[in-house]
Length: 489
Ligand SMILES: Cc1cc2nc3c(=O)[nH]c(=O)nc-3n(C[C@H](O)[C@H](O)[C@H](O)COP(=O)(O)OP(=O)(O)OC[C@H]3O[C@@H](n4cnc5c(N)ncnc54)[C@H](O)[C@@H]3O)c2cc1C
Image (cartoon, protein in one colour):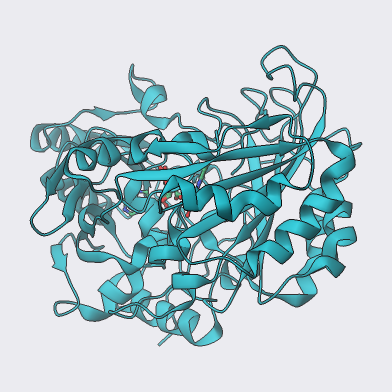
């Protein structure tokens, strides 16, 4: 997501659950007998256990997304895989659903009742430079992996924001700064440790529980609680990257030039354009304050001189309000997109397109609607390259033929205000007809419907995911996510 301007502490007014899986069992109310067992759970786990009226409960429920709330009946602040197992076994014994939260960036909906496993205390990362891999625990943020990998001249396939949780990003596919060079982050996973609904801790690989390994990489958190994973690192120490910001009159030309330019690029260059109506507030730097701008974000995994040559057609468009393109260590890569780092309320949808050319510019500008009272950022991502190639070990990531993604990102205009849906409707109406589907990781908030969730996958993949779900989670214990209900057998 591009550098933006969210207001803080927005909360959606209606918290309806648009998608209730048919097979879900309603969460049992916590009766006296269950509450008595909570004491035993406390004795079994090393991390804290919180009930709604206890200190610590609110902190573990809070996350980056503030439009929705986790309101579970019990929180387990897991510190290791044994705690996760104990929590899942407790939920199973008492007929409770299980939600998982690391940072709260991807919270799709408000979660009522059930048991929340908070993984933020499981935040370890161990790099093996010899195998170019990292073991990443469930609650680890990308920033920690980047920092641990950098001394070895290595980098993870992280995305625009280093505060995002690494594990869930990978489970959702993961389209990062180096995406066109190396593909989806989910294409570079060697092992996943996961506690399934039966309470078993499984080490899942291409050889062991192969169906589950396939489903976890792309099918998100539907199949269990991942306690950690072994991921590939890539030999990238430095980037040529940053942003070029153009003022309003140049926006149509930026879009036309960028679309044409993307047809000429090597896979080592990944870029996007954000159309951003910056508000007139002191937090926004002076040249952009109060202006509707186009921000081109560039990450080139190559040398700076070649990077300069490649971006010359963009600079030739005209004067820039800001030009931060420079050679940088990968550890500074947050500067490429400048994503917001403080919690706020947002809703994001996207369409994946096989192709996009200058004829679509009026439709894209119509989605942006900078005069609208509700702020909306439109983002175009250049896909293709390695994203379009099948991984060495097949996984559930779909729509690989997409060469572009167009997304709408909207914010609450004031704390507690609802998030305006109009931009999302405009996106669906103007470009949805040509869409292959969408990227699940960029479907953020907004109570996604069953239809929206399905559109994250091609039909055969969705069917197979539902079948794997029926094997590993037949009662849909893990349903507080972009839920794929188990296939009916
Ligand atoms: C500012 C911002 C920038 C982003 N940039 C990118 C990007 O560049 N590329 C990209 O691909 N995506 C991007 N995303 C999307 C992001 O990858 C997903 O929202 C991801 O799910 C966030 O993971 P999290 O752990 O931070 O969030 P959380 O809200 O903690 O987790 C999201 C969901 O994942 C599931 N989950 C979490 N942990 C586990 C676990 N251990 N086991 C099983 N399920 C689990 C749960 O269902 C949970 O609700 C971005 C999101 C934001 C808000």
